[in-house]
Length: 581
Image (cartoon, rainbow, N blue to C red; front, side):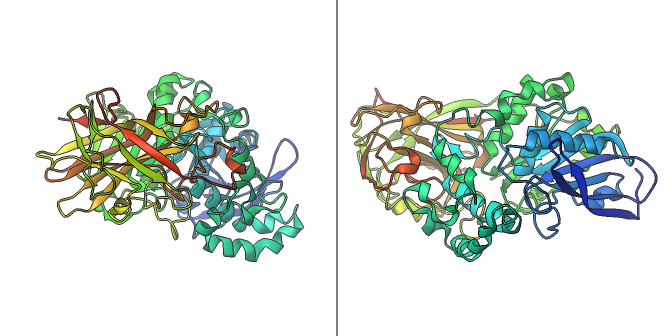
């Protein structure tokens, strides 16, 4: 492999789009007359911020390894012209940029795209247009669509992500560029800084359509559009990657973390491309890497939340991606194609393991049923979790007050970790609340590995015409530490799907399926499996007002009395993917 000791860096290179808008990029390439394959990153997070997280591959290392690296500010961001609106121009601008990269004098015509989060979105949104010069992708911690799993989950608004991302990374960080078309925006700097430092309090403001930090006309119109389109309607359709896998003809190296907010989308992209990719290579050459990481820092830390997963959790992310691109852009036989398609980190065991597919073919889905004598409230209650089906047991009840919601404690969060850090944390304090139902298994007699998709089937009633139910899978150690493993939510009006709303009849028992996405965790002998059931997880999700009004219009809230059943007719349970090898 050739190594280059001298690198040329061209800053703010103009790349014209089809409508005449100039997007600017920094280009890192070997100081030679040779042609080189191109690695392209299209980012909204400032291409010149070398102290930030934009460089998921060190461009100096990549250029030294024989690549021309192009890092571009997307439309309306930082050095680039135009007006930014999330996702709107990423397909056409992505294709135009790929074509430019493929035709430069220093380019071989082979282009790969890389990056994570929104930078993963810019990859997929370009790839669905099948640009000819594009040969491979490396999308990390990103989604498969931008309604469910990005802005909403189970029909509930992902408030912390949406508000913190829009306020901090999209608006405050880019205020200088925004002021080029909205001069008054600069007057909002001090307000945005103050809001950024007190986001949780601002998120309590109702109605949501009056969210104060972004209220100036034209400052962040997309934020209010997200709220306005709370149903999975035509607004979201142009950006559904999972509906367009057949248009993508290139292989992808998908990577993510068990505590990443977009873990569901990362897994869907891998599985969906294997099944429906637009070429034999796209279907047969997908790769998946999942570690014990959160969205940030990624993947450069062995500590996530308050737990240390050991030095084995550290990987050479740059090296792994460059090896991938060596295979597809340089056509070198790196051996990567002969390796198993899936590599996952088994938490608890704290070991990497290779699999031939996701989920593993030999998992067995087992039901663990909820039980109590009617007092499962808090960890001091009588809730239990066993493999035995319930009999006619008393129901559990609690009162959900939207003005006093259950607080978020870690989990699959993004994006302002200073205030709300992601990952595993002790949930014991949360479990002292009476509006949290706690169901705990007996002490495990042997190691029990849970690897694969996790879901809760809940039979419940409420006094409201709309409400939420949340679920959290927890591992309890010998000393009582309660570590969150996976979590999810369902908004009652979307119990039958997110394409239309169906309010509920108060007092009627409904069957709710709560998707906890996926995990891989070894519950050790001597530990216990726990399931938390409640109706809020704030500020990760907005607290349902229980009124049935549109999301952005609810200025008032009502309390709801929630009833959870576990009987012969209503066997509430968690479905765990058990792997016994």
